[in-house]
Amino acid sequence: MPPTATAIAPVRLLYGAYAWLVLLFFALPVTAACLLLPGFERRRAVARWGAAMVFRLIGSEVEVRGLVLTEGDEAIVIANHQSYLDGVILTAVLPPRYTFLIKQEMVRVPIAGFVLSRLGSEFVDRANTGERHRSARRLVRTAREQRALAVFPEGTFDGAPGLRPFQMGAFRAARIAGVPIVPVVITGARSKLPAESWWPRPGPLTVEFCPPIAACGFRDDMAVMRATRAAMLERLGEPDLDIPAPGIADAGRAPG
Image 1 (cartoon, rainbow, N blue to C red):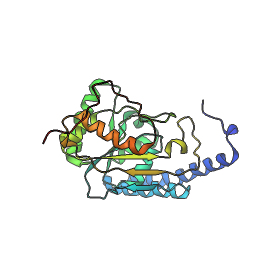
Image 2: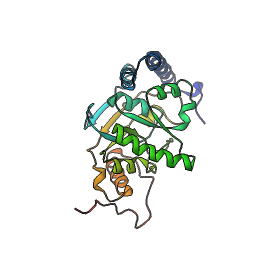
Image 3: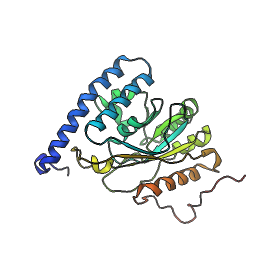
Image 4: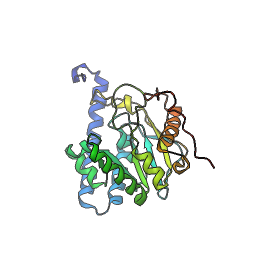
């Protein structure tokens, strides 16, 4: 059960209230930009500015490590999922051309659903088998046309540390479309805004970009996924919650 305000230490209570005020303050210009500005990239540029300013003002400016993606880079970014903050964190550090793949439920969230739609996010319904197949085909098409996507393949998160099983759609799209995968590891978000609480905590946030993986060089989608997980687990410092059965784990590159 989420802790009540009276059960939270006064310093954290004050910090959490301040963090929410900062977020709401910057949500206004971002929402206005999404309503008034033409073009996804203009709206995304304002959202990127707003996200970066929020983290700077609450004392958790995102530290970026490893590869830095530029506006001209083509990649499918595969990131771990720790918190509701993850999308805002990636918005702060990715170039504006990147399209986010979001679960369908977010459409119904007031304000957030509108903003995400106006930012050009792609929504997927993983609960419906037919829609999941249509989403997979649409994802391949989007990867071919836009060649700059950001995906949280775990699909959800909880308070327990660990890398949950991945949905396979992004890895298939990368291999078919010939777009490299860039594994990304987010740390600090799980403790900063825990799954069981709406009260943010002070603490650092880090995003580490791993070297690109040429998805088209693997023999199947599972091999691409396993290589991506290995790169992320090496840097994440959390357990692997998707231990394959014996005989399934041999993920190699295609010959030649």
